[in-house]
Length: 123
Image 1 (cartoon, rainbow, N blue to C red):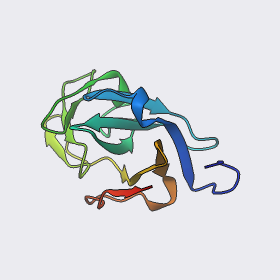
Image 2 (image 1 turned 180 degrees about the horizontal axis):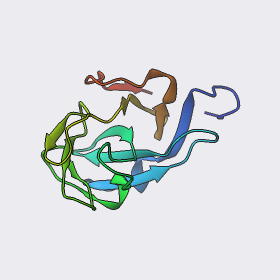
Image 3 (image 1 turned 60 degrees about the vertical axis):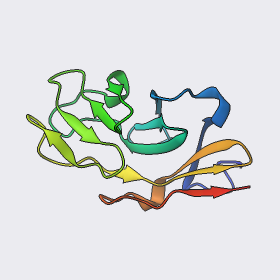
Image 4 (image 1 turned 120 degrees about the vertical axis):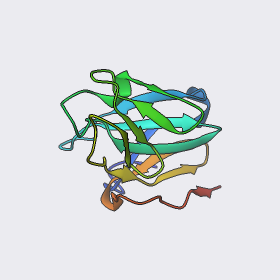
């Protein structure tokens, strides 16, 4: 899908380009960075900036339990809900729905939320 045709949907990469437990930072024009994760062959997205500091979550690590660890102070978040799990992080991060369509991974930027989005796959 062309970004110019649907400005709320941002192309990340081909689904085949990301491995499980990988994080990729994307920078939509004019918006804050977003971290996109692949865990157990599903895709998730959150704000890339830790709610505790200005660390990039995409520089941290994500595990098979859907937990990303901030590289600065080791606080953690659930990438499915954005919920802060361990101190010093106490505020959630925004999450974004991710769509896999025709083999491409897209983030729906206009639908940020702090609850678990239903995964959607389109062919």
